[in-house]
Image (tube, rainbow, N blue to C red; front, side, top):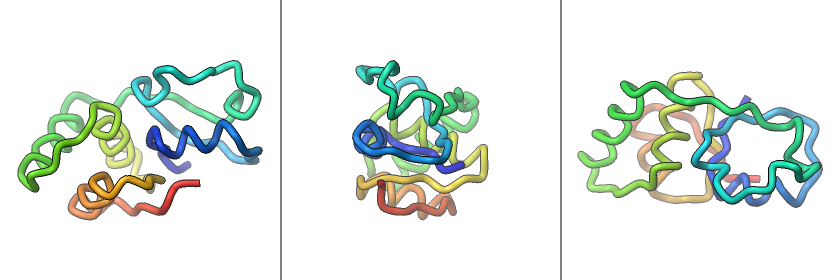
Length: 106
């Protein structure tokens, strides 16, 4: 199940999908979870503190400033050994450094 970052989640609200995606609590901030396009298509997980710190350190080492939701999504993708769907270049760069596969968001 791919991990969706906030940019991909925004697109998910507008299309019908037939699969389940993973995401994190901060990625869902401000989203209408009663939206039928989201209902039943998301599983929410909290990545471990260790993974969050690891991703944050890697980004800082690369000179990249990530948002909290981006760090969480990358940490979750790392833990779950899943690809991340994102349209954000800085997220892609960190994903590549971490060995996480990525694809352009929905």
